[in-house]
Amino acid sequence: MSEIGFLFAGYAVIWVILGTYFVFVGRRQSALKRELERLERELRVQG
Amino acid sequence: MTESYPALDRDAAPVAALADGGEVSVTPGPARRALWIDMLGLASVALILTALYAALVVAPTEAVMGDVQRIFYFHMPSAWVALGPSFTVVFVCSILYLTKRDLKFDRIAGASAEIGVMFTTITLVTGPLWARPIWGAYWTWDPRLTTTLVLWFIYVAYLMLRSSTPEGHKRARLSAVFGIVGWIDVPIVFMSIRWWRTIHPTLITGQGMQMDPTMQAVLMFSLAAFTVLYVYLLIVRVRQLDMGSRIDRMRQQLLMR
Image (tube, rainbow over the protein chains, first blue to last red):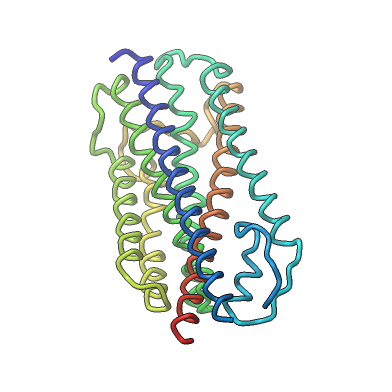
């Protein structure tokens, strides 16, 4: 692999790792939001 | 408890009050805080993209190593965020938890360790990609590389311990002890290039930073961008862990009815 190839690979890996972590954080946020909404509804129903 | 709430992402405090069975007061505080966090997120992305542009376009080509040296502008800040703020916050919050017995510190430590492992992974992957064309090998058992790999294993084990133990003071106590003992490797990683013979470059010597001024400016900018990104991710993850804890309390409340 050429020097530019290693440079490209290096930055590609960085974006893949950062992107994966952002997706994980985003999904976690959505799941927590849904669960909070569900529990809030249940608590309201039960008064 | 009959008030209506704004969007859930913005209403951590009312939901917490609901979970605690207390009176609910809807104030603009949480919404404004969420807006600031979103803005910090956008700022960190903008800073990282600018740092990328600076690393690939603004920084001059290194005379000996050539273009591959540009990996350095993201490799070194990743290492800085992991070893500096991330694992040090784990260490400090572990001590704070043991002295104050407040689970808030345990959650901050957990979130910071997770981010630190992510940035250490970036450091450990980009290093070999830079090393291969320069040293002729992806990996050598050099003291800096070895101690960094050990550090990664320590904090992966820390996260495994947390995920395999139920949330509570027992887990917090175990994690805090691990977080304090594990941190011992951080100064070892930092000092490894001074204590032992190494082929890893030494950035700061007795004569200061031996670098072209433009390269130095790009590096400083990148360090700042990564630090802002770390702060943003830490805030978001701590809020998520707080939400998870509230969810647990609400579940218990529902079970008790």
